[in-house]
Image (cartoon, rainbow over all chains, first blue to last red; front, side, top):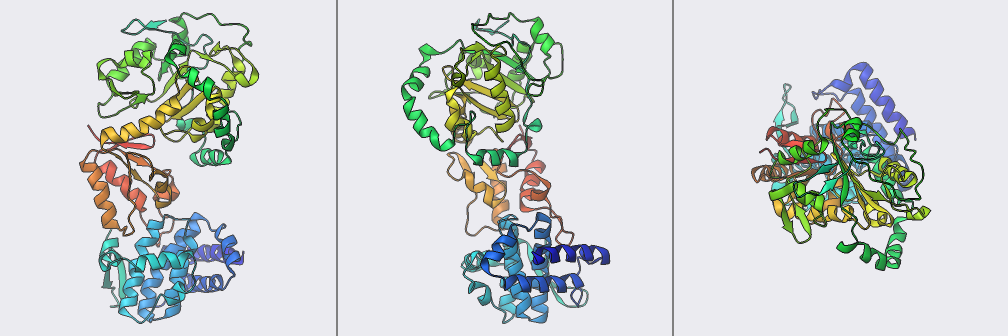
Length: 171
Length: 357
């Protein structure tokens, strides 16, 4: 259960150093996001059985942190054009499946779809997993364009103060 | 003793106990109730899976007991919020108890008393009924005398249902049957409050199995008929005793009738939780492969514009309503739905949101 312990520690550390309350997207990823990427990396390579066992230990509080991470990684994957960030963000969504309302996950999906349109980043790694997350992602990708748009989930694509691309909510 | 406008007479609880029970707010948490339901035994410990077999074996008796001619004299007790036990006692004629009945020994932990107003409880009850918003339907399976009399001209009869404005304006309502028996223990039919083991068992089970809404507690519905159908709502606890009427059955009918009469009840909540209502007749679940925020908002607004009732399929807990992470702040989709209803003037009644008048 080191993944769970690691997430807990990341959250606690982020509270101590202030990352936890940071809503902006600095050019450099926060320590929290960097560390969370490492944890999701290690989660992704776990055997399916271990993933399932671990999933049961993810608290609601952790799930919200993972969802925040997923939202953040959409923006950072676009900025850095980095497939790993893209895949890790989606994997974090997989970690909260069944814990949070599926609709909360759906809200994030257009960000990733938009990233895929604006870059060469792809869903293929996730889709190849052939698991619950891949089914969820595939169902989303099967939608018509309007229902995959940022607008339909209340997001816009814009630039922040440093002229870096960013996805922002309109609600 | 109280007489309704038709001359039908009602009695207060002879023991001074049993009329007063907690509402849902005092009951166990929804999650616990759900877990107990999932455990799969009925009110009297019968495994839910065995019920079909049980019911078949008892069909003849079941049919007989649902014959009007076999009905006991209606409901003996109707106690509402703000009615003191002492007041009830002071105005009552206590019916004599059949023998043999055990000595009453109600447990204080299972009975709860309410606050006093010093008013006549039956008149108070009728007043509350008269003042209930007309857009709320309610039903009982057989047009039983107490309710049909008490409801007067507001009653609509739909097949074997009595639909009427009723009940939800009351904070705390308890309808008790006049008699109860615990067949499993070989007891006689006894006035409630005197037949202690059956009553105690019921009360214990109310604590354990009260339901989340006015829908049927499946445990009661599927297995409770050996002695009683029991379910509670946020406004009260209802006992349907075999041979008098089956309230659990009526609740299922109520659910259907309510949806039919009011144009459908919209079901809000977590996607995973609303699935349960997909097969409920008259209930509208947003089940779209293209779900998005705009679609959701439009669907909720449609219900608001049509004055439809909303049912909350998920508990309104902090976990379900707000993100706990400041990097992902704000309300959840479910909270957004509830906010829209509140902003439109909806009032929460238990697990339902009722449109403004």
